[in-house]
Length: 57
Image 1 (cartoon, rainbow, N blue to C red):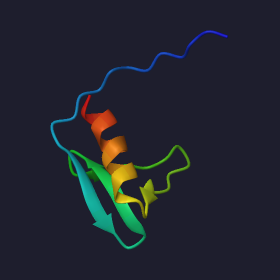
Image 2: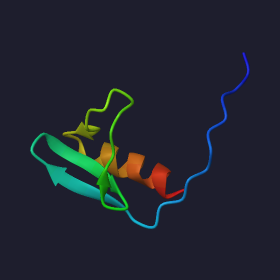
Image 3: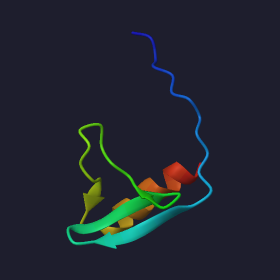
């Protein structure tokens, strides 16, 4: 199976934010959402920090 290629998108600001459900990520001030249009969140701060580091490139 061929690997799917995604365009490289650079964000000026990647930040971990506190939301009602726990922690989420903001990319240039916009809350990161899943393909199903729900907010990506977790209650585990170290996990969301690791995900944010991936978005920083």
